[in-house]
Amino acid sequence: MTQILLTPIWNRLLDAVAIDRELQGEFMGPGAARRIQGKWEQLAANLNAMGGAFKTGDKWREAFANLRNRAKRQYADRSRYLRGTGGGPPPPASLGLSHTYQRALAFVPQDQLFGVQGIPAPIQVTRIYLLLLTLNHSLVQAATLVPTYLMHDYNEL
Image 1 (cartoon, rainbow, N blue to C red):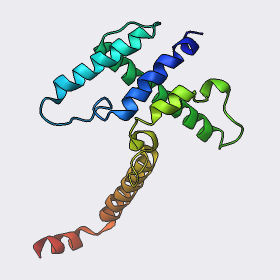
Image 2 (cartoon, rainbow, N blue to C red):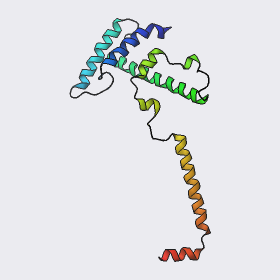
Image 3 (cartoon, helix red, strand yellow):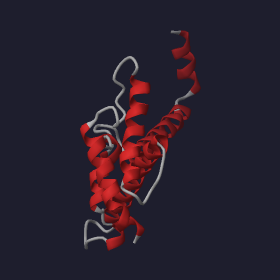
Image 4 (cartoon, rainbow, N blue to C red):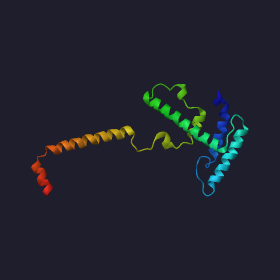
């Protein structure tokens, strides 16, 4: 119920952040820290005037970061669920993304959602490591089969 009442506030926050790159976290040259702090304070005054939540600029900035993190977590839960079922039936409603979370995901870098292209997943790295260990073990076993007189001659070269 509370989330439904706060939706207009979240929408206003997301609208304001969408049009201002500095509020999104992009550092824009000299004096940016003070300027960004002032923008968050001004945005806090506008959001507080709507009622429902009264926070400082820093607390609204933290609330925005938390909203992005909750959206990422819910997206990851949904993705994990879909991979676990092989993409079968749709996920339960509790794993569906709300409109607010969908909007918040627009401010999350794509590599945080989908991973960096070209980098193997941890399971692939583990498999490669185990394969290399197996090969190394096989090479060590093969080296022990070489007669010692051949090894002695090789070392003299």
